[in-house]
Length: 353
Image (cartoon, rainbow, N blue to C red; front, top):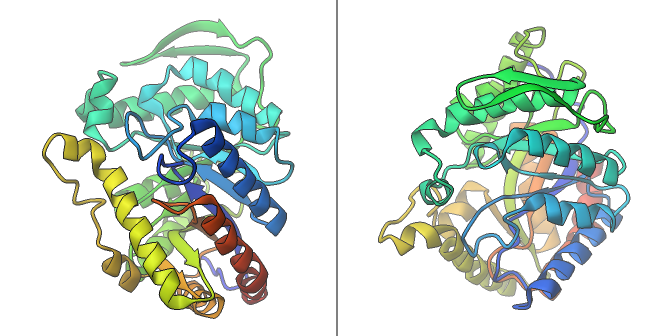
């Protein structure tokens, strides 16, 4: 395993922009989230990662590129990207164009997360065969890399065909292309990402996180010089956990607020399957289980610092993605939590990292 002892810890934001996470007026909701991300940028956060979902109150941004384009013009330093673009939902040629535009609009701050999507109902709304989604995803990723590295796109596959398409001198600002990310929640997906040199956001309780980080670096070392590696130019990719976070000087109040907010989040993430009389046990994880496993971090600045520091010491990750606007958390609550984290937690964690 690669020695990560001296790795620099950096911070990112992740969220879905849920319907419930602020103003009921959609235009105001977007502005609230943009303002929150601007505050995170001022606090020194490295990146912002936006989920993509369709036909669900879990996400009011089914076209993440549009929101990121607006955000790119309202920020200056923080890196921006989807986590993830659901590749089976896109024509890869059009996505190549959008990625090139976004990277230039942001001044070279785009990070490209890619995935296939896991919700069968979202697939079916777009007439995507879920059983073919992985195959479509992998071919779309191949097309994407070709298009970002060539002046003309040539590809003949099972799902896509492009016959010498000129790409109009539309190139990404970052060369050869922006950073690639993958959401990995099991061993197979960790290995998939590590073989390709991709940055990784992962989850789960602390023991699973520790295993994921170790497996990632072992695999990354094994395949560092492999043709599978899509980012040989990136020597220190980021890997780290996704954690829900709420900070409050009053711990009892903080726990009460976070518990209610998470209950709303669970309803949002299960809405599509619940509409069909089902429940998705992959995402239905009780609040107390999340707290016990370290996936939900709540409390005073000192408690939050100690919990993250413990996870950092155990799993030795170099990046942490924080969902600080989940469920029913309103704009003022999230901003106060962010202010406390930036003032009283981040500086100490940066020293430790």
